[in-house]
Image (cartoon, rainbow, N blue to C red; front, side, top):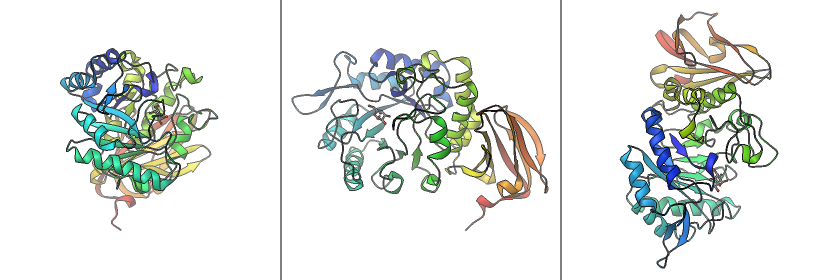
Length: 387
Ligand code: GLA
């Protein structure tokens, strides 16, 4: 969990933005909710120095990266950077192919805790990707520093099948998200609906502790401002769409990386990102990714197994009109009695069980409700049965 500069700022970053963002993550309480990684994406780089080491951009980051990392660490946050498995990054900056060992050591000397490693300008084939990511995975490991490694090749070479072995802890599953329910026509213009409901299907079996599918960073709170929003012609999402985006990413056990400007978040967006009961579903220690278990004319029922026999149940409305959604115990493949809590409204709904038991909600267009079910007595969920 954390924040990344990309969705809002792209190349309009500098060290003041990063320092102010570190302060804002603390002041808003987001750090204490778990958003601990402050990740600088593309465009912090200068070039290479006489010894071949990557340098910082002289105007955007005159104080250097190490000083900035110290500032971030002093505020109880972790610090992330970005590079690419070719000679240039997606934004045309200097990148790490052929210099993996040297760059990993430079990054470790700068005290980074996270590296996102992109794939622009690199060969199409899967074999090359495996080799290039393995080279950086090994180089990071050899530094001896604890660094989260994010493989970002957008899912085209099925990274869920090989990236963990290349040293990755997470891998992007799709092209880039944009601040829109529907997205646009380009490959880097995915909307929330397509990424969350369609493009993660079947990938749940590849996720687990220390190995996560990454459906890209959050757009909650962007409100049409910044790089993957207004700059690309997208006007942003409704409050209900942002709520659904957040809840769905939590059901997906996705990395929760905020992309909005946290220095100026509106109250509703801060409240959405601060839902600690949904965060607990996302971060649950069982480490299982949720999935859709039923669909009815644009209404979807999702289930995510949690520790100690609990289950999270999501009701999602993909229709453009209001709708009532219901998930019966049969839909969820559970039996017996459960204590039910509504995680969207933070209300206990009592004990439910028996053959006609269900959870239900009236949902606005593109809205959702998420419930946590805690087993009582001999309650049982099929997803928790051995074998
Ligand atoms: C690619 C990635 C984005 C971002 C940019 C940076 O498009 O998918 O998330 O890192 O490159 O240039």
